[in-house]
Length: 185
Ligand SMILES: [Zn+2]
Ligand SMILES: [Zn+2]
Image (cartoon, rainbow, N blue to C red; front, top):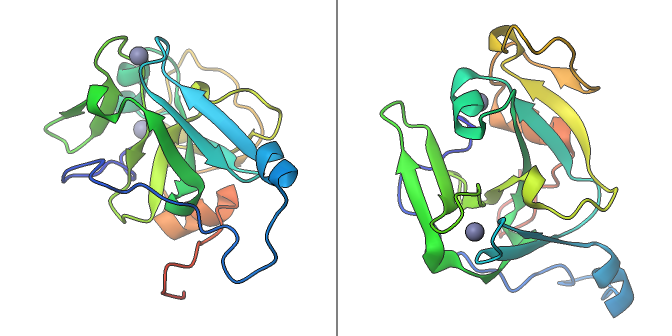
């Protein structure tokens, strides 16, 4: 998660009124609905949804991600801001920033990891485990495999990176479409 933690303030009005249909044929309501994946924290105070198929999940196996999750790895998606929407609970989010710069946003009531806007302002970091398991998600990359826990003996499919790859490289590996926001690559 080192690559995606933001350093400055969060959640300030990066609400998105979806520009999925801009300049192209408008998707039908059913198509839109079928590509929507809801997410929430354990207690339900924080809720959101993402839109779009084939978001690859990356798992980071670094020691910070192990501590914050209490598990072998952090499992996350990178979602363009145009495909992310808060439903409720932004005011219930607390941010912890470690001295290393590692940032964790969580529900103040139940402690679950929750999404946060990334440093580039163009994507949200989304904890994959908070999403409904709808079968459109699969692990596409493993980060920091050189520092994974010794007790983690096997990894699922996906590209393996010894450390943290460049953001663009990771985004490409995850199939994250670059949403146009008036700029082009
Ligand atoms: Zn909660
Ligand atoms: Zn990590």
